[in-house]
Structures are given as structure tokens and as C-alpha cells.
Image (cartoon, rainbow, N blue to C red; front, side):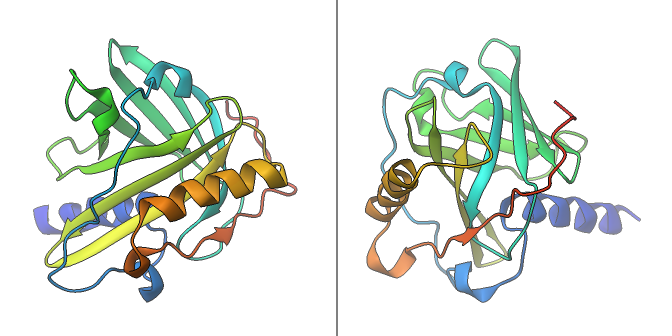
Length: 189
């Protein structure tokens, strides 16, 4: 029974981060997550509130958004929709929050965590986000572009794509797919 729960939780975590088993975003066997530079002046408090996913790696999806709230100093909960999953975000290093956040499914705190990092953001329009999880010699990276609205201007979309592109070497360039945000109900938050 415990094995089934662990498999379920791992499945939920990978749904949150990868949302597919497409091989175009699986780095490959016996590799490590790409090493990426992150902004040193990242301010997580400015990330609070609702973010709509505009583009992501993985399968095409629709009506995806996140809502982040601070639950105690430097500790955050993220609500992922439409899956209605709550994830916990805690700084990897409280002295340098820019190093990223440990991401875990709230109901299963003992499960291995993934690190979620904001590669670039202007806090008001867009955020380029990267997560990577190593699991049994396979690496599952996930990249996304988020927006404060369910649409993003062409210039901000270009800016966020370029930020992701500069962060990866040629081998690890993410393949982003548009998230359909039309006819979605955003009443939850």
C-alpha cells in the first residue's frame, strides 16, 4: 500500500512539473539537471498572487494557473489549477532566496522535493520558470512562461523566451507549447 501511495505522489509531482511523458523534454539517462544562472536579486514577495501559464514544455494543456501566498516568513504555498494540488515552496537557502525554492506536494512532505527557480521576471508582466527533478537516472526538466494576465504581449513573450533561451546550452533548449487560456473559469482565486 505504501508503494502505491509513493507512486501516486510521484505521479502528482511530475504532473505538476512535467505534465507529460513527452521525450522532447526528458534530458536522458544518467544526466544531471542543467546548471542555470539565476537572478541574485529575486524577491519572492513580488511573486505572490495569481500567475497564468502562457507556454510550457510537455503536452498541450489549457486553463493552467497558479496562485502563491506567503504562509509564514519566507515560506509559501502554491495552488496549482486545474489539478487543485497545493505545493509547498520553501527557500533552498534563506540567505540567498534567489537560489530557488524546494517544491513538494503539501500532503506528502516526506517525498523527495524538486527545486523551482524563477530564471527571469519583471514581477508585473511575466516570469520565466524552470524546475528539474532527477529520478532513477532520468532527468525531468520543466520550463514555463507565466503572466499576470491570461495573455501576454508579443514583446514580453519574446523577452521571456529569450531569458529561457540564454539560460540553457544548445543541448537543453526547452520546447515550449502554447497553453490555451480561452474560455477558462478563473473563479477559484
